[in-house]
Length: 345
Image 1 (tube, rainbow, N blue to C red):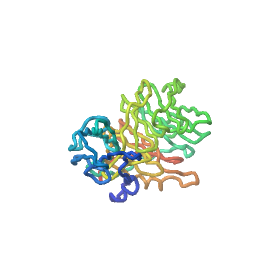
Image 2 (image 1 turned 180 degrees about the horizontal axis):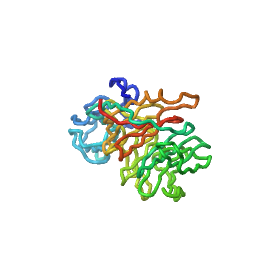
Image 3 (image 1 turned 90 degrees about the vertical axis):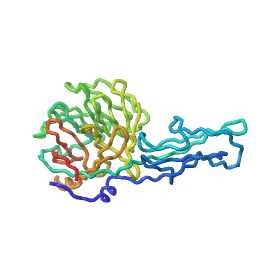
Image 4 (image 1 turned 120 degrees about the horizontal axis):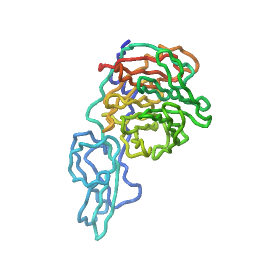
């Protein structure tokens, strides 16, 4: 089955418009930063002019500008930068003293997201009681994590039959979230407990735990064989060192109109991050280097193809199978797992 919808529909379903403004320090400064763009929001490739508003007509001897702590000229082309919120700073030299002022600047993508559709290749059974949070293939096997307090579990599943091959339950105090597999380890997040778990992939024995850093919650995980990528329900995707499990950086998911929040379950697919959107049946395709939302997929018709029942919830769970070059998607308490092939509309 194929879906058809226009770009404005996708924007409404999966993308959040940016609401931003000049965020100069609230204290009364002698100076403030002014930019040549409305609401300090600029698109990649555009020119940016910086200047200082001298509120008290003081004798200014010099001004130095910085973008995220790095020196920049007062006139520049915005390029080779990640998208999202950045910090502009100016150090003003006047009357034998200095004053530093800052404001936020927002960088948008210079292209709108492409629209993708799908064709169902196969349909498989799925445990209707599973509140699916994470889904991932590794060496041909499907691993799944589920949520809800008192129901959270980690499973290895025969995706063709739905048979549970291995299962462990999380303690009732934990709400399970996304997972990813790297080498011989399964990494699994919990929601608000600020705790992630590491399991041996063969035995499901817990071999370690880790705490979160600036990301306060655990939502989704994926990896590119060298780095773990973690979502926290915002527009942020955090980078984790798989050896130390500490956060080493982030990108922010933005498109040509604003930021995309509610990033949930993640999947690494041929150099891109596919992200479920919380409480939506859509998926954003994100460039992990820039944060650019380069594509969107509307899976909402799948919701009507599963058994309708009181506990039915939204799409959640994306797994890429490199052996078939297809995606497998399901949802919270869905009784079906769909194998789909993605094509640009």
